[in-house]
Image 1 (cartoon, rainbow, N blue to C red):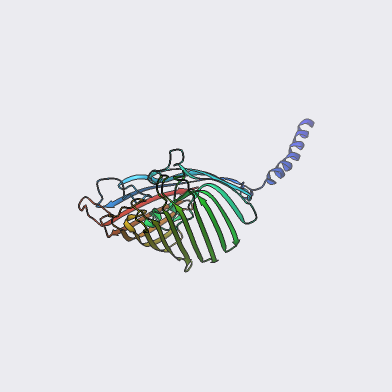
Image 2 (image 1 turned 135 degrees about the vertical axis):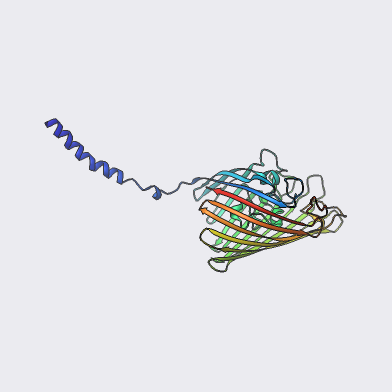
Length: 367
């Protein structure tokens, strides 16, 4: 009996100590996240072109969601990010129809790299990064959920989504960020000649409602062995939150490139206007109007347009409806119509067609 009583007393004395130890552990949500994080994204889609040609491919100047009448994956990516406040880096791999269409000129070793860069702070409020990173040009990115509309405008599809080189960014103030870049060229990982390109970016946010961006590019995009032809390009956009539910954005691109003709430059310019409305907690609607013009199809058809090639002129609009059943899930539906001055939208019923319509749906998940 004495032994049993002693065991009971020891056990009773031990219970409060065990409970105290358990309750002293920090809650799971109070543990600060580490500098290394994993992230991923998957965008599955189905598109249908109205009066489409007998192919599952969309026009060659469209790279995102470029398959029609086919269940497909536009982009799937998974990556690692490291950032301890002084050193940072990212490595992300990708696959999908967007990669197949937009990375055809890259070697198999590099085409599945979405991002691969390392950086550090050379001084306070500055970052110096080197490697492969997303482009500093344009309002629309490769990741669909980051864009106001599901598909990309013609201007976004025909300007860089990615670039390779070094970039130095500096936060001049909480409202102003300046960036300068040294690049291999216009959306290429491997260098194509012996010259480098220069990029700049200025982002100004004078208020929480307004963001103004100005980005530029200067470089020779001719392969080695060809005469240099300088390319100049400028991208401008602004976004403005009219109310808590309504937002607008305006984008304008202009560029020119030296032509084979002595003293001539081929130019292109494009514009897009966006309106976005938060209909309810989980519903968002958006609309886009756009146009694109390129002398003799420069950028669109070939780097070196011939003297007899027609100018590329096209424009149109799209309507977008989004539903987010969870914070990391997004369902999207978009109807789009484009019309060109030249017969750039060939159809089986009309080889000289100049109009193009489609419906695109998407289910995306991110983590």
